[in-house]
Picture 1: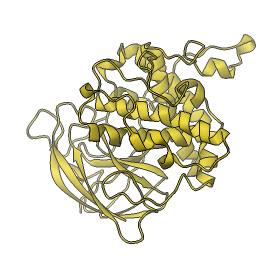
Picture 2 (picture 1 turned 60 degrees about the vertical axis):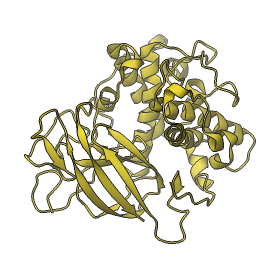
Picture 3 (picture 1 turned 135 degrees about the horizontal axis):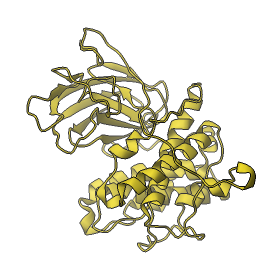
Picture 4 (picture 1 turned 90 degrees about the vertical axis):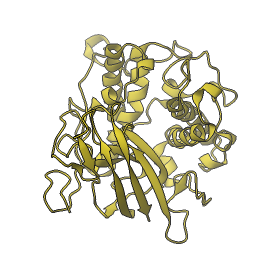
Length: 365
């Protein structure tokens, strides 16, 4: 078996940080940073903003919080680096607005989220994401978690995440056990959907992905986890599933397109879960027909400094839990999950827009 990093006959799991650099924040007299300075609010009324910098801050805050929380839970030292913002550049879309402004906000939001996640602080999910109510989506609000003009399946995650934050906070205030699956918003999974957003089933999967993660943040990750992580056994062979649901071995096949940086498996895993993998297929990771990659990476071999795992071969199959550290998968046949959350599979590339091909991944747990 070829090593994910060097191409030699070995099996390796690689976990490295990826990213960019920081940005200015408002300081109080004497240089002290106050809570409201660190967390830009939405026009004082959580009303939202189409400003690209604010948009970047909102997207990055939850990314950084995931990263910081996983570092804390794994017992890793505080490990925030200047290049930890690269994921913001890789996932940027033109609909987000001016890229320089977006990245300025992203850098600031990632650092704020990482600090809150690492130090287990309550965070500012209500100020940044919560909706005024759990009713019909108000398309005039703007902001990172509001459907953008033209629509896209990607918007479904943001809409679901914001709805989940609100529902989680409501359940926490009511002092009821966390149960994201029992909420009407999760069951319907169509808030914010418009015909222009594409296939409704695809929208539903993305919405529920975002809703589950937002609910946990709104309810409070620590309390959510001690409350069983919202776990209620409801096996679903096609949609979202929790590895604790099955009473016997469960298998799911995921298609990982080469032109998409991350693909959700819709599987909630738990730290230490043992998985078996079978990976087939091939991707082309540039417009050059010779830039081909099997699951272990480039057959040439090639490396890409701007990819999520720059020390791993270009085009390799990689993974992450929520927005935590990316980790190498390659052609491994067994893998122990490094954290708890939604499992994503991806392509180790710095620009997936000109890619082709796909991997078929059979997961068994």
